[in-house]
Length: 452
Ligand code: ASP
Image (cartoon, rainbow, N blue to C red; front, side, top):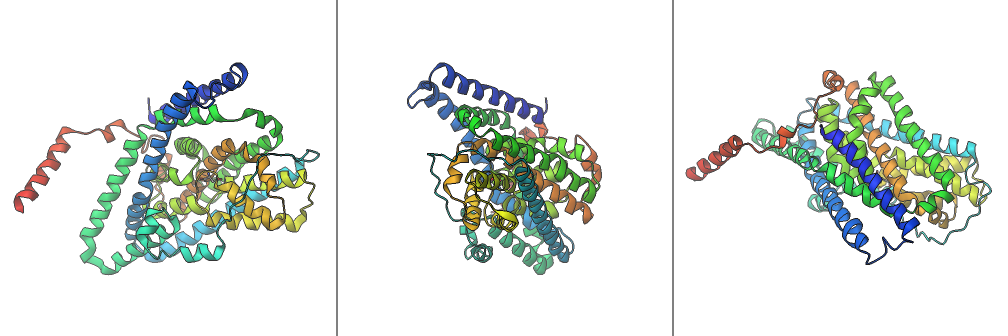
């Protein structure tokens, strides 16, 4: 069985086990099953499932910074014409903003037409104190890291991208002399990609644990109160992922959306299980380059850039939530209010990284701007965990669509790879240790020792 099939089965099993625990806990055991100190809670759900899931997410995150750094330096060095870099960057930027704006506009359109939240009573005891998202001026200043090591240590994606591009350009300026350095970085990139494969081979177990835990802990009674919000949101999210983004791929890229979607399944499951576009970068990067045929010179830039600035799913949540809460509090936003929401959401997505739950922080920024009460966010807080999972899957799909379309427009897409359904499939042999390889490396090491 291939890895994608295993991951999908693990996902379904995890959802099933988690939901079963959830239902038993609420219906049969009167919430005592998952109470503090209960065995199932301490040792299984928030014990085993939590530990295995968290270890896996950490392992993915561990790869993000070195992978982005090495692959982007390689990407810049291998681009062949440095002017191309500016063009790729501008194309990605425009398409990311465009898809996000379309996403939020359609969300507002649908939610306002249906009139969700009208006539509902706004009561909530869940409090939400919004954090401030960074102002745009700070975002711009912080793109240039005063200390690259610190930027890497705290995973500041835009700063890392900036630093890696400059290193790449400087290597090109040094020229021939830097050849060994480039070769070394290329090798480091290859080693990191091997690690992605290695870690992915544990994915089925981890995905099971992540989903079983998430589903066991979801408060379903909340869903019934917010059923309109949840359904409209999930409907618009699916529409954007399966129709709007695929139309972009088909019309701008002249590529087959079905082939694309089949290959993206893995990435979407990872995004769904981790709720983080950032932690999914290694999987997105591997899929986009090896399965979809996008050249590393485009993907190494567009994928991490997209994980940071492109959040179509998050924008959709903000659009639907704004209309929902405005209706509940009987606030008339009007055309200018909605335009402000669109503008604010697009800007907020630039300054915030793709990590779990960040969408709500961005929402508080939007609310403050249009004068909606922040307590409104408390109303949707309880159901946000599941919705975060769905919208993150939409976010990463957007990153991959734009990467593929931009690569195609620059002649950096290998269409034979894109159309080959088995290209770049995870192969178990790839991560096996072979005695032969071990010997070769051991001999190399001992021969360098001898030279010393
Ligand atoms: N979790 C989302 C992401 O990583 C962001 C959000 O909507 O909260 O893309």
